[in-house]
Length: 347
Ligand SMILES: Nc1nc2c(ncn2[C@@H]2O[C@H](COP(=O)(O)OP(=O)(O)OP(=O)(O)O)[C@@H](O)[C@H]2O)c(=O)[nH]1
Image 1 (spheres, rainbow, N blue to C red):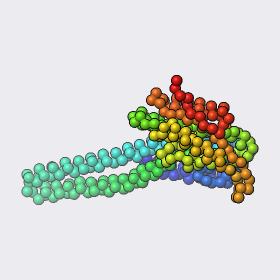
Image 2 (cartoon, protein in one colour):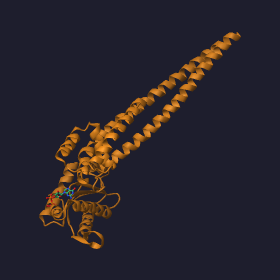
Image 3 (spheres, rainbow, N blue to C red):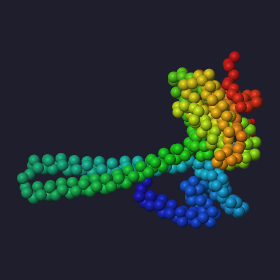
Image 4 (cartoon, rainbow, N blue to C red):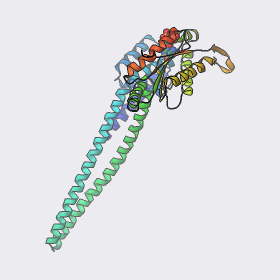
């Protein structure tokens, strides 16, 4: 990342800011970081699908409610994370190349000085002439001066680059967290789960340790949404996420797989123990009376979940491992819901 590019980035950002903020206030959109990221992209003009959708909404006079804004973030910003990460990666490469260039320049400066010193050494042996000595000393002083000035420039460049690398690092860390987190529940998302199960299986195959997978699905959630509304449905998803997190151990991996379906990876756990964990989850959720407002003002009754459980086999890939838990879930649903089924024993 060179300085000229950096400055041009700042100019572009400032220009976008001057357009985005007035537009957001015209459309009554709160300037939160998430919302701003949508309008930043809109005025940057590189996310064509996002621009098409927003233009369509504007032409239809759609109000940019919190729900619509968060949908735009979900569909057009978070989904772009891999490309954004790729961009940051490219920027990191540029900083590293720049650094390498500087280090090479510095070593060539030092090499010149070494050469001058050895010539100086040779000439000193051969001469006693004061003029020649003065000339030699002057050359040496010039050479030293240029190494010192190179070093000063190098130090300043290194400091600037160090700041750039630190800010890239925190940008990467934030992006990596965002790309793996489900916004609604703050659990890991499906992408993070796919990564986790992959490394989990490699570990299992090395260690032959036991491992189980739970697929947890809220029962009749469509009916719940239809009765109480989507926003309360969202709150219930967050509640189930929290209940899952609180019931399992810290080493277990909980993620929202999608919609009203969650997954829990239980490392070092035999099938019987996994069934006990699943039962704890089921009971905890079924026994909780849900309400909104203070002092149970508006009771929502309770919800239940069905759970499918599979245990990892040597021959498994991540698909077969998941499918057995999903089939068990399907059987739990067909058996009346609010219950747990494990994978069928091999015949
Ligand atoms: N509030 C809310 N609802 C969601 C979300 N994601 C998926 N849903 C809803 O979850 C419901 C899932 O419905 P179905 O797949 O028919 O399942 P179900 O009604 O739970 O029935 P069973 O699973 O058979 O017990 C749909 O109405 C979806 O709209 C979300 O992020 N928020």
